[in-house]
Length: 176
Image (cartoon, rainbow, N blue to C red; front, side, top):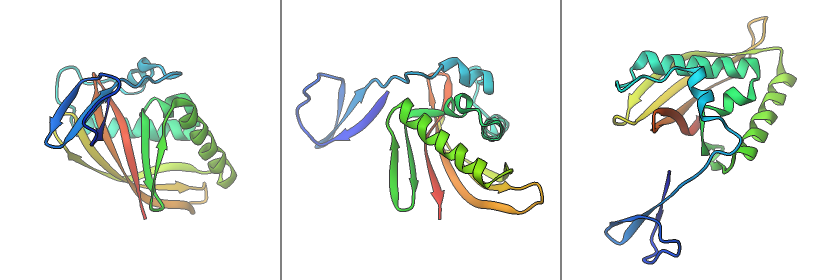
């Protein structure tokens, strides 16, 4: 489900809403066409009815890193909730549907190939819980060539939320 803030007082489509003073939240169902909801579970087993711990998120980020190094678009895309938001260069970039997200991921894989050969390494990560269904993972990344030189090194943060029984990336910030 996607909730977005809307200050209008009337709703044309009749979806559920909750009053927040003068503002209202509207809930709309968003489908992920072209993505298998089971794919995520094959990459990182989901904890059953227990609070996901630091080890779970470390494994999740390891699997995400490995997917990029394999250039596995399906696996990479399985981590993202659609729509997905990315903040960098002073702007929010909205990956509004699965086709757009796949296209952008494919473009980045091509950029990586041109700069390579190189592999992604996660040098460090920190985890900050935002409640029982939301965490912020901040990681330092390097894209390193076989001779040890770094192509890129940067820090970014991922906001992960639990959708049903799956943890997905809702958004990311590339720190500049």
